[in-house]
Every structure is written in structure tokens, then in C-alpha cells.
Image 1 (cartoon, one colour):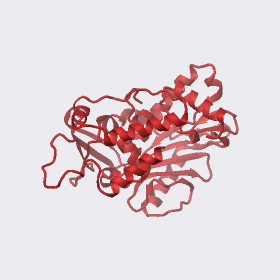
Image 2: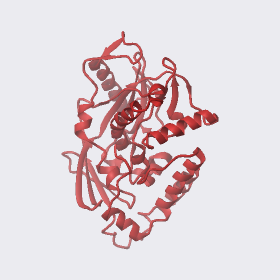
Image 3: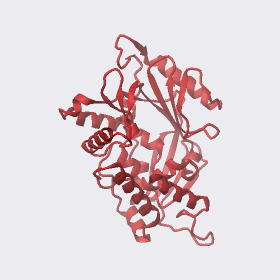
Image 4: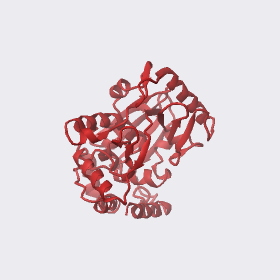
Length: 350
């Protein structure tokens, strides 16, 4: 059902009918419509986007610099997840990621020290998107996030899923949602530990942030957004999340009633803080535990203001589809004004 919503959205975008473009170019721009500008920190060249879908929480409340720095990849010994007698120095692993980044910047599509796991959302030419790779010689996965000031303000050029999440998530981007993965991981781990049932059955991989040696930040400025006349945030244009490789004996299946029930029960217990997509749950080969491999803060990704309760995957996807329709087609002008003047945060924050 979600794909149907994406189809309608793509069709509208193809004909240039999204909310910000249906006004005649001869009319003056609406001064109350939220607007953002981006530029490299220290550089004067700006790019801008004006769009009613932009919300303050998705853009200005997800990057926590202090938390980010506190959870950087260690420089000392990192033991392997299920083989504590084996390890790698953090400096060596960081050096491999630096080499990966250098290869990416050269436009290469194959990498010396990494296998590609997912590059569907990565544009090599524009140097923007999300690239997921696995170390060839060590049990670690690297998720490399890259944005430029220009790519950041072009949400309608990034493919099906990014456009859909931008619309229903109030301007949500994978780049910013990535900043929530570790903070949300720590929160759900604490909740799992408190439950005698789930604490014996569920586990999560370790995760760390990584920054390149030559750090380059993007300055984001918002106007008429979330009750602010002007608001600014500086964040990394390039960063990575390093996580344990998980070897699965099997993934959960949508065709298994037991798997569906387990995933739904666990998602509800975790207060819908994780994406309940069935493929995000797997059984780890070494421990036979359920592993949650995706820990981004789901309410921020889809802009939930109130916590839903999942009863089935059919009702769940219908709920997402309905939210997409409401966000895209059913917001009155007054509702859009109120959304900016009286912003409502997601029902939980990472």
C-alpha cells in the first residue's frame, strides 16, 4: 500500500504539482511558508528550498553534537562481537574508512577493502546519499552518509523512499535520521533489559559514529519554521556509522505468522521507536537471538505525533499510506500555518 502512495507522489512530482510549485510564478511567494538555506560552513554560496512540508523537529532537533562526539569510534582495541579473543585497533578501522571515502570521492564503484551491501540510495556523481558496505577482512559494517549543500535541498530528486519520508516526516532525511540511530539504540537497550521475556531473546549490534580527518560542515538556516523567524544549525556533511556485522541463520519472513506476531509485539513493547519492517528482524547464527539491525528513531522518520499501536502489517501500512495522503493532499492553508506557529514534536524523541 505504501508503494501506491509513492506512485501518486512520484506522478505529482513528475508533472511539477507538489505544493511549492503549484503557485503561479507571477504571484509573490508566501512569506509564511517555511524556507531553508544551506551552505558549506565558511562559504558564502547558498542553496535554498521553500516547502510547506518542512518542520523544525526533523531538521533542527535531531543532531546532538555532544552525543555524537561521545559516541565516536574508539581509537583503542575493539573486540569482535562474538569472538572476544580477536580484535582490531580503532585507528586501523578508521584508516580503512578514510581509504573508502577517498575511493568514493574519486568516483569509484568498487572498493579495495569493502564489499557493497547497498548503494541504491547513493549517487556517486553527486557525492550524496547513503552507502552501506562491509569490511572484507573484519566483522564490521559501515554506513557512509554524505550530503552537499546542493543535494540537501533537493529532496524530490532522491528516489522513491526519500521523497515519501520527506513528505510524511516533515522534511525528514536519511542524513539527519542517521544521527538518531545510536541514541535510540541506547534507549531501546535499556527498555529491553527491563523485561524478563525480551531480555533473554533480543539483542542489538554495537554502533559508533565516525568522522573523516578533514571534517567539512554544512550550515543549515531556517526561516519561518517552528515559530522561529530564523534558526541555524551546523552539522557534518560526511559521517559514518560503524556497526557489528551480524551473521544470520535466517531473516524474519512476512509469510510466517509467528514472525509477524513477534515483530509486532516487540515493536509495540519498544513504543514504536523502531521501524517494524519485517526484514529488520533476524536470528543471529552464533547466539540464536533476535537481532534488531535498524535502530533509527522511527517516529522522527515518519513524523508521528502520537504513538500508534500496531495490530497487523496490513493496518500498519494502511496507517502510513493514510498519513501520506493527509500530509500531501488534505492540509488546509490554516493547518500549514498552525504547524509552523505551534509545532508538535514526535510522541518520543531520540
